[in-house]
Image 1 (tube, rainbow, N blue to C red):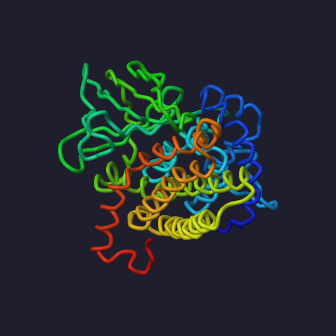
Image 2 (cartoon, rainbow, N blue to C red):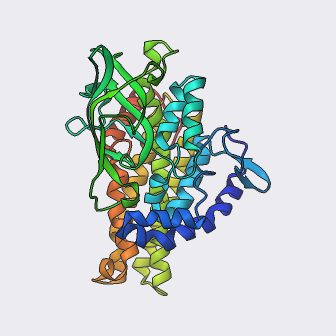
Length: 385
């Protein structure tokens, strides 16, 4: 539960969202331009990264109160405010990112300190190595494995569609160490180890994330790399992936909410008048956006209270993505036949939404999760839209 003034936090971040929008097209054209934004100081990425107290000398302060962005409720406020400018930068900036969430769940004190001290250094990216070329993010079907080579454990396999992996300094890798549902482990890996071969991929949207792939050619593992080594087998591995996804799905949903708000604001800034039918349609989108935002906030509170229950987070992501896709495809028609060509920022929003779709599971996965939760009697108190 957060004690942060969320309204004040949202207001504090409006100028940051505006700064991201100013850089958005340059980064979309060349992801290397992200460094210009980072060097400008307009994006306090370290203060917004979710570091535990004690790792930053200058935490974010809102009305004089330190804000560490450690809860899901705080993260969704930050994500929406910044996504209004550029959702891809929110995911592509240096910092703990998804790895930090799984570290918080599974790491012991020594591992947590090793990770956060390293990532607290300016310009340090991390990666989350779960998705595989032939298996997607189905953690139960992983082919990447821990095997023995010359009497020592090594990582062998192939991960793909991994954000920031080609520029990361360290991150987590999910790999199978034995058969069965308890046979998946999570390992904290430095990218400068021999056999770690990463390269970026070309994408049409969310370009600041610099999705990549990594081939693990017998990457050495140390005993202290195994996350959850102090926990029972049933509390680590796949559980880490499930709890991480449940905590981050409301955040992805809030990115979609921010993109939707940006699209609606953009068209109103570009046109001074609308027909009665167009006004009705935009007002309907406004109402649905208000509902989606409320559901996202409710899902964030649920994820903070019980990260093992993914029902509301799944509902929030499916709802927010449905709306973002519909709005970003509808808005160009209000600006004329050549709108996406003449308004490149609007075109970028259209291209970014499919990237959000693929993060933390597609809408099909979300609806399956929601159905399972509903059948089990979860979230019956919520009004799901």
